[in-house]
Amino acid sequence: MTTIASEIVSQDARLRLRLAEADDEPFLRDLFKSIKGAQLSAANLPEAMLDLVVAQQYRAQVAGHAAQCPQAQSLIILRDGSPVGRLLLDRAALRWHVVDLALLPGTRNAGVGREIMQSVATAAREQGADVLSLAVATTNDDALRFYARLGFCEIADEASASHRSMELALAR
Image (cartoon, rainbow, N blue to C red):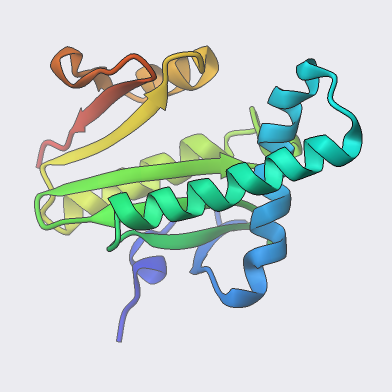
């Protein structure tokens, strides 16, 4: 029996995906904190308050993703066997949607995200999908540039005040 993790194969032998398990919860919380904590540090909150806010936002994100994309699968991104990120992916027959892609700070700008996204696009195309879609926070200029470099185009009529919708057409 094949799993989503075995269907998405990186050209970089050091990178692989596996389905997230209950034991991954501490890693996922720490990954979230590495991203949100850095964003919230500008608020100069006391450490205990910052931890509380990050924990609340983590629970809200998990609940929101579960409600909006109940079929999405959480995958752990491994580099040389160690977890370095998470990919939350919702796969439908003709449209795959990247709900979330998050990497540890030390892994960013090292080609991991690009390789994972290219591997996802290849697998989606091979599985018969026509489109790979995602949404990016309007304030996340680095991510917007990253996805544009990968060939994603903004879908103006699906944009909101907080997020921009982007798609990659998967020519076969």
